Length: 351
Image 1: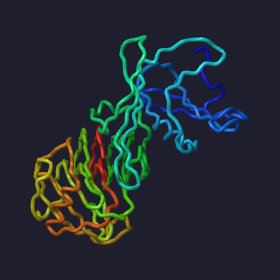
Image 2: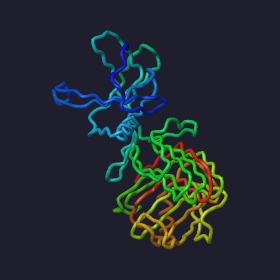
Image 3: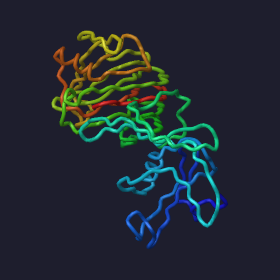
Image 4: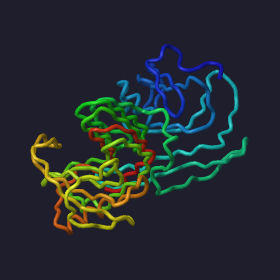
């Protein structure tokens, strides 16, 4: 209305959903709350320019607040709200769809996504629908959809965003990784020896792949390598320690070289299977000796679905034994090269 809340000086600012927001913290002393009159804090994200329709990625605001040291507790509510204070007015809410993206629980099961509310595109109308549910998760799109990252990385870093694990790792060189939430990211690299950019799922190494069940990665990537690079599903197991790759596309060199152990057909594509040995090389357990398992497509592909567990099943049938699951991530890797990639779809389903 006439006054932009909450007044005062912002703590910081951030960009979410194509808009700039100022962030505030205010103190409420002996005021009404969901547990009665008490003292509590208010966290605010306030757009610098007004907007009355669009999409609000609530979790992106929460993530940025936590990066600023503003810690939230256990969730009670998230609602579209109109509030008046010593004023008059009216409003018609003709669209209000609250969607929760699929998140895996501690047992490894996926809850699907749930949408509540209804949509009516006619101005001035009201809505009385009871809502709907959907089992689909994630989204498609294009590289042009990647705008206003939640976080930008340039040095080695790892963490969580939207329930998924991310990591940028390099030994040296120029790297950048922008995180957009929902598994999406873009990256660039130059003057490197080795660099990896990935987002996916990690586990606690208590279950094998077949105990976790189906693991599928749906992906879409604008992939532009210059030199040695590959686009793949990547991860590790322990007991035994195995580093694995399911390679969908590559740059000037098709990894990993050597002799194929055989071929498998998965998701309509043919893959050559390789095993390589790494002697006293970096791993999730420090410098040590371990094996790498590879499935490498015979033809390049940059969008589609990867049935990770079907590769694992095929490897097992070839006598290639994996251990307890540590990770399955969509990964862009560069080696003594340069390039860039925009990952506009990355849905890790199951597990």
